[in-house]
Length: 286
Figure 1: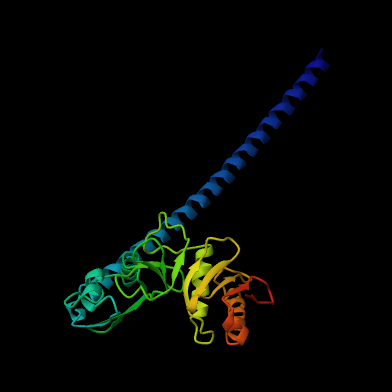
Figure 2: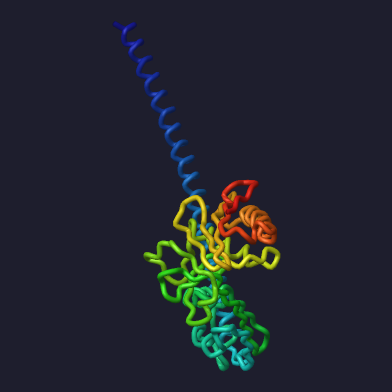
């Protein structure tokens, strides 16, 4: 019995030591976790501090800028130079842009004014606005030039990039594009598909190097355009990269139209009324 009690006491002693070691280990884990949490919160606090500092700095710079520039009467516009277009005069440009003499030179965002102006005036291709200290504002616009009319939609015209806009006069003597789906089309949109092929054909033929006068382009077909030339002549036309409006497309079409131009100058070309340019290297006529 005594031996059994000794064994029992030894076993109890071992359990107590193990319990003490476990508690020490748990305390160490708690300390490690506490240290990690402290570092994490310190890092978060530092990041928040930096963000708040940057925000305060940003607002401070804006406030200082407003005080020094937008709120400074020294920068009041007294000289306004506008390079107007054939359609838009200076008065209309000032009205659309909401700018003019007497306003602060820094009282508006040039980028926003430019974006709004182009969005509201589709017949303008680009606009440049620049400040000259202390009191001068310069504005220059480039208007879109009508290249062709869109059949069936009144005064809808397109430029050489295919952008749609309105014109009230001077469009009867330019070529017409037939067969384009006009549903939903509005000023500022860009036509696509075979419509761009028609635009490219008119643009290339109008080049002084080519010198072929087109009166009408029919784009109803999917794989070629049908063009009407002067004196009742006509041609079926297709080219590599047709309708893509890329440099390669323009090059391929120019090469083909230069060949047609030479054919038209020959005796056979003068006697022919119909031409087929849908083949890669040959032109057929009758």
